[in-house]
Length: 251
Image 1 (spheres, rainbow, N blue to C red):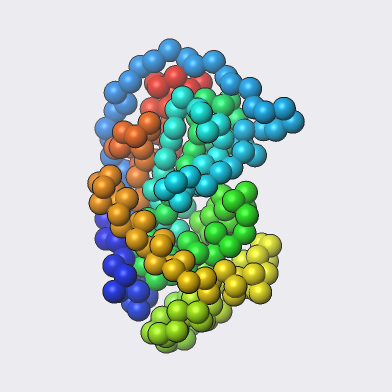
Image 2 (spheres, one colour; image 1 turned 45 degrees about the vertical axis):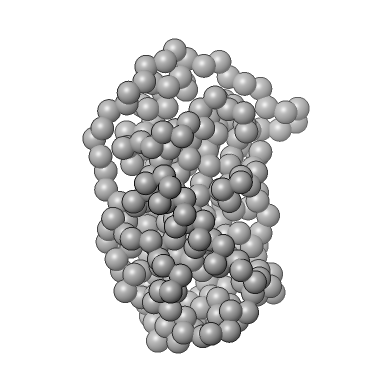
């Protein structure tokens, strides 16, 4: 499991990136412990689909779906974690279009920050509207290998950017050096929007502090880690997680 990035270690980037890609999590064969009857679908607000209802939670997670859903699924994920990328690819369509769309399951994504690249990405996916956060996160995971290759190809510039002491320019410089500004500009977050967003006082520190505090409180040791109605699950892949949702009443 990749350990969390301490605020004092924000100047370190490339070594943690390699670690995160190698060991951000592992599958577990624990079986589901519930066996509930099916829960009837819940209608969305008029003119809406539940997959279009997105809100920011008190924990700074981004919840998709019915805020009063009887089954509340939370994922702690790292944007530099290939296991999280695989889960996004395998689960995204079914989780959103079948389970969230029914109104029975809500899905909340929270960031666990592992390294400097991860932190910069976690800031950038927040630079748009709440509605754009899930799609931007999915785009990062879908292009993770190319993103990391681009950062590693410019490692000297990125590491120099990480050592900047000026918080108002540090993360913009990292994003520019690593090709992230252009990546997000191609997906609707303009260069000016990124620059303003990444310069916000306390923005980076808030993400790191919430990541560490919540992980310590909930025992989140790596990614992806899932909670269902507040109970931490052992399952870390879609083929094991879907039966848990079904056994809890999702159909």
